[in-house]
Image (cartoon, rainbow over all chains, first blue to last red; front, side, top):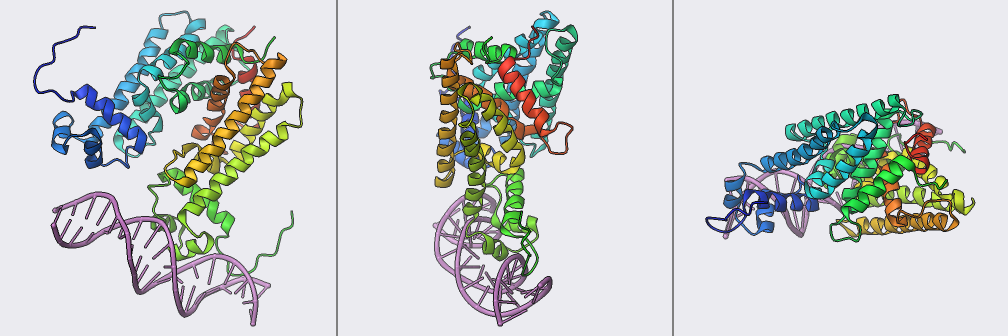
Length: 195
Length: 195
DNA sequence: GTCTATAGACCGATAGAC
DNA sequence: GTCTATCGGTCTATAGAC
């Protein structure tokens, strides 16, 4: 963490503005938030906003890109471990990314494909899901994962569980990121039933 | 099933109009859908719409009520079985309700509390979640469910998995309701890992 | 004639563009 | 700061099946 000296007039930088804007989008919805309303909420003028981003959609695109980069990074990382352990690695990594980039991932998960930018994001998400499904399938072939549940159904259910974190997880809460990742892995791999 | 003789001018009845309207709300968002746009999409006039419902919000309220009635019915039904089996009963019932009332439940799960109606629905949803968490806790006390995961966290994760069905399940798909309920129970209770 | 669903013209309020 | 389009909603009259 190099704490670069901040120069120039103080205020939002591109990064801080992005985070703040995404939070507002999550509160009120992307479409429902006009640029004027966004600027007002952030306490600056539209002109200042457009100094950092050339359009409202560029804010969206950047945030969705960040979220997707994080998730795809998890896949890259998972390729380093043995095929049988890959699913656990992906689940754990996904929980970590969700928590670290909660606002951006929240925005990503609410995208419904209303524009080209949103559709491209959905395409990347679909590709991610397919990669995960392939990992599940490989684990089934290896015998590490039960094969009486279809790989793509299992993938959707697992990521339904993981993604639901954005609905309720708050950084201030009692549950830490590691504990949460552990709980997700426990349920996903071993289930809740005692034996 | 008394198939009452249909009298009067043909067209939408309240039920059919509700289903159609909820589907449109899910496509475009409740707030973003104007009454005029809704009426146009359904092929009738605003006035005809207001013959069946006294306000746009009453449509929302009715749909959310239907979804919540269905979920609460699952809880009532679950009270009939032994405490140790109750969680399985609730999960299975919830999957069934989600599938049978997919449009209404989808709408419910997207509510963010932007009005009194939405907040009341969220309150009922929270109460439902708490009831389920109590069932999980009771199962833990009985030793039927592992107690190294907090009951309310487990509840949220399980229902994250179940609720995610609205994002991808389509009645036309290959997966039937019963098969899906079985898959959910398998993962939730036994996990994906082979033993 | 009765019952249900429907249409068109219109209202006051307001949010957003200019 | 003004102006216009659109919002949710109303009123009255009517169309069509039994």
